[in-house]
Structure formats: structure tokens, C-alpha cells
Length: 480
Image (cartoon, rainbow, N blue to C red; front, side, top):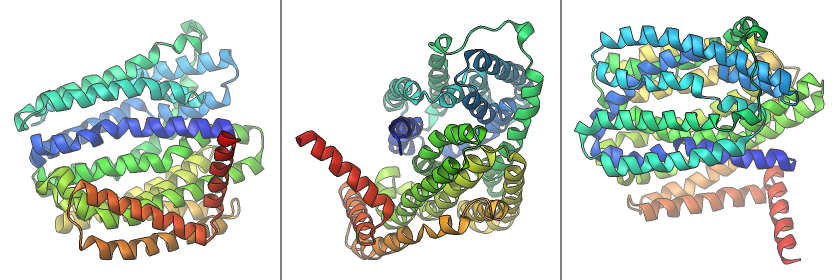
């Protein structure tokens, strides 16, 4: 992995964590101050708003990131592409906000929905896709860091009880608005102003719609889970459990997908140059990384959830422990979906196959939700998501068979599965003698990491040995 990829990976990893680190830190405060019912109410309202955000975005963020990566070295083309996409986002957002306000006015959650309109205003303000396309991850990371601290202080100082739900929704939404606004401060360094008569957003609109379709499919098993939980269970409690489990899942998923976000522009650029050897090398590298991280997380959550949830969320949220044990395995398939779908199919222009795989998985997830939520509630929604993600990855593997060494990629998980299982067995035995507190939880995490990495060293895993060698060279360089 060259220095630029490594540097961008680190910045992107930090940025992805920062995007959710504030909610993760504030979760214990919010769990105890707002309670499961209020959190569930917010989760349900936010899921409704997210459909409109999805519609306003029209797939432009994913499409824009890829297109900018194609022309990142040409300021003329880069500027025209940027403003074409921004015109699309501005027009679509204005139209969607009009429809959204009518919808909100007739909804029982209209106060929260009116406040959440900030997330729609953020759609054209969000130009993070542009900085990702030109591989400027540092800028996003540094500016996001300070605003996340503000968000953390806001929750700690002002949110005290369930009656503060409206204040929390307004404050967090406004801070999110500021986070996107500051990205515009330096944009003139990277793009020029282009007169409207030289812009032609129509073609970009047609192309971005292709990326909008997978976003719709993805929303069925991300947003619809929350919506269906609220409708089917007829209370916000299950949404509250599901929301807290999903927040943990999101930060862990960002760690799993961090390398893919960095590699996607590079793979797209390599495809434009017909450099298929580089594509295959990066895909293999990314898949091995996904297995290394996601399998450790999946088995790790089995070991620590019962210790972690009671002291972190509070006794009211004990059911989240069971949900986390399921969501850990979803991460494995989400990581592979990113490798085979976003990094490969999308980067080489095979959006149609990618969309088909998502719709097949989304339909599977929807049917499973209908069957499992009435019986298992929030647990049923997560099981349905696990089945849906498995179907997506299986479909994508079938589609790319013969183009990538999929068998070799899948079997590269062997060492990590062995290490995960061997890590899990003694930790589950030890867990019975520990208590739910921060010390015992981190003790299990440290022991688990040691067992996992130790087993991989014994198995002489290629990835681990490579990074051990890098660390040794760094140490020698310091003391040379």
C-alpha cells in the first residue's frame, strides 16, 4: 500500500469515526436523559425525513465522487462537473422541501419533522463527495473534528430529560448544518466559477439517476426497518433499542469501509487507464482488510455485548446486547458488498448489475421484515437485514464470477474465521466471572485483540506479517 493511500486511509478512517464519534460518546448521556421512548420517537421521525433526503440527493454524491476522480487533474472539466452536479442538487432540494413541508404538516410527528428540514437544506451544502473525489481527505477530517466537539458539549450541557427531545433535535440538526457549511470555505481553490450558459446538467442528471436507484434499494433495509418497526409494533420502544444498536453498527461499519472509500477513486481511475492488474490487486487487498476487521468485530461483539450494554446505555436498554450480537455479522457482508459492489462494479461502470443485486437483496429483506418483525420485533429486523445482505453479496459474486478470483477472495477469510472462533471460546468462559463495567469490558477487548492477533501470527497470516514488518522498520528508523 503506497504512502498516499495509507495517508488518505488514515485521514478517512479518522473522518468516518468523527462522523459518529459524537453520537457514540453522547449515547450514554442521551440514553439516560431522553430514555428509550424519546430516542425511538426521534429514530422514527428521522427515518421518514431520510426518504426525502434520499430523493433530493438523487444519487449525486456517489456519482459525483466517481466523476470528479475521472477529471481531478483538469480544473476546467472538474469545475464544470462540480457546478453541473450542484445545480441538480439545488433544484431537486427545492422541489423536495416543498413536498416535505406538506407531508410534515399532516404527520403526527410534525414538530420533529419541521426541525429535521435542516437535513434537506444540507443536501446541496454537502460537498464532501468532491473532496473525496480529489483525494483531499485531510480537509474534511480537521474541520469535522471541531464541530463534533461542539455537538458533544451541546448534549452534555443542555439535554437533561425526555422533555428536551425537541431541543436535542434542533441543536444536533443545526450543528450538522454548520459541518457542511464550512466545507465551502476553500472550495474556490479547487474549482472556478463557470457561467451558467456553459453548464449542461441534463446529462449528469441522467447518469446520477443510475446511482439513485441503488440508494433506493439500500434504503429499504436501512430506513424501512425503522419505519416498519414503528408501524408494526405501534410504539417507539423497539425503535429505541434498534436505534442504539444501529449507532454502534454505524461507527464499526465506517471502520470496515474506510479503506474502500479511499480506494474507490483510485480503482475508477485505474479502470479509465485500462490498468486491470491494479484493479485486481486493490480489490484483493480491500477484501482481505474487510475480513481482518469485520470478523474480529463480529466475534468480539459476541464476547463483550453483555458486559458493555448495561453500563454504557443503562439497564433500560439491555435488549441492545442481543441486537449487537446479530449486527456484528451483518458487518461482514456489508464490507463484502462494498468491495464487490461499490469498489468493483460501480468503479468499472457496471451500475446495472450493482442495482440488480441491491434490489434482489432489498426485496428479500422486505419480505423477511414482514415475517420476522411481528414475531421478533427489533431482533427480527436485524435478522432480516443479515439475510438481505447475504443475498446481495451472493448475487454480486455470481455476477463477477470469472472476472475476479472470487473463490480465492472468499477463502482468504479462513485465517480470520479460525482466529475469531479461537478468540471467542476462552473469552465467553471468562465473561461469566466478570461484571458489567468499563474496566472488565476493556479487559475483554484487550485480551480479545491479543488472542486474535496472536493466532494470526501463529497462522502466519500475510496481512498481519506485512504490518508487523512495517512496524519493525519504523522502530528501527527511530533508533537508527
